[in-house]
Length: 268
Ligand code: AMP
Ligand code: MG
Image 1 (cartoon, rainbow, N blue to C red):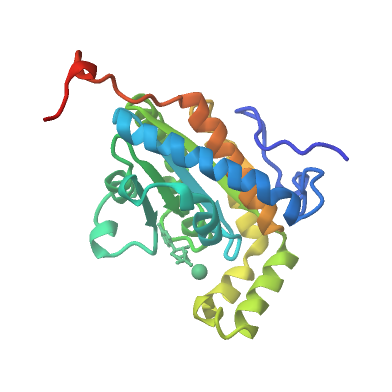
Image 2: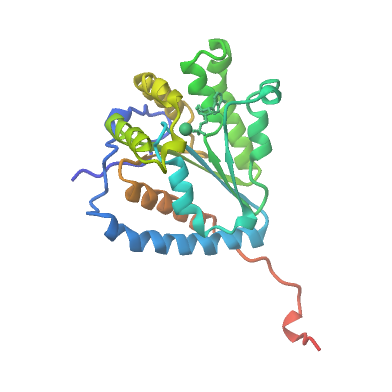
């Protein structure tokens, strides 16, 4: 089986049809993925704790994807090892009056992780070049300039000590149909269903196009996009855990040095 890339080099054009949402990297089933996922989560817990102790840098995970792509599920299953004391999830909804009175990056800047923290964006500033374009919420002159402003913003964050990991959870249209239907059929999932989801589904092709534009134009060496095959939840979880593990291992956070001479102190 051909190996599917997770990232593209900056400058190359993302075409989502080139990525198979059902890809599972040669792993047969959930059982085979379970052990590695658990192992990754244990490593993430340790690295996250070191990041907190070090208190100098932060990690930001940006999660995007179509409705039902599994943003909430990824957070529930992959982030469970992180210490609630140093991990913060921000779910971006439709902006309110106060938010609309500011530039689109204002509310995002307020939510970036503090030093030592892991920040997770469940949706993000990318909505401002996605849903905003589909529904023509701002004029072209405004959204057109946002790609570059996002790149500059992410560069500022990186320069300030935040490592940014961007993940697009890639599902097929058929898989979204199944998941929306499951939300309708299962009384315990019905709370998640909104009629608006059906309307948005009608814009499927338009969304794929604006996603391709965002992935292509905001794919930088300092904040690259990953396209994670997400039709299979267990594979999605495994891949996101791998990306985070690799990123945190590369950051290699260290416990800060203790004061000198402590090893000779005895508490009476
Ligand atoms: P959910 O993630 O299901 O809770 O839904 C949140 C909704 O808020 C989605 O329909 C998003 O498209 C919408 N949303 C998030 N950010 C923005 C934004 N900047 N402008 C307009 N709609 C947004
Ligand atoms: Mg929703």
